[in-house]
Image (cartoon, rainbow, N blue to C red; front, top):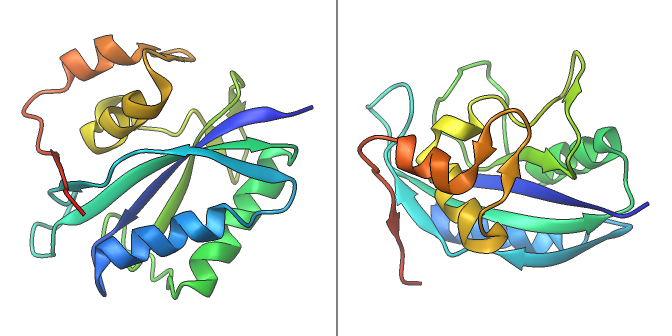
Length: 162
């Protein structure tokens, strides 16, 4: 059964705009999946350590036949191909970051995957581009995107013209 999955994309190293664009191309090549839409690119301040470059973020929508676990593995394979190194530093600088934000209307909690993505509802760099391509989507357990955006203080994202 096909499900709509939403993928968060972020980069702040090695020409982040190019990294995000390359990740979008890679997403379009995931087997049994179709890239349905993608948001504009947005710049945002980093979470965590402030001593790092700003991020470039986007959100993509994939229509997929893959299970959530298979899709997560495909995303991690793309990260690895694009040069992502997992050094354990939470919210540190990275060449690419792909997060499975939503998988249909499902709520999933395993040792390796939590959907909706934890913190999604508090991150303007995720919910603003998500709203651009998904409208006023209802996030399971969190509410409508419009409500979540209104609750996010001090929007630090800005749309990039690229």
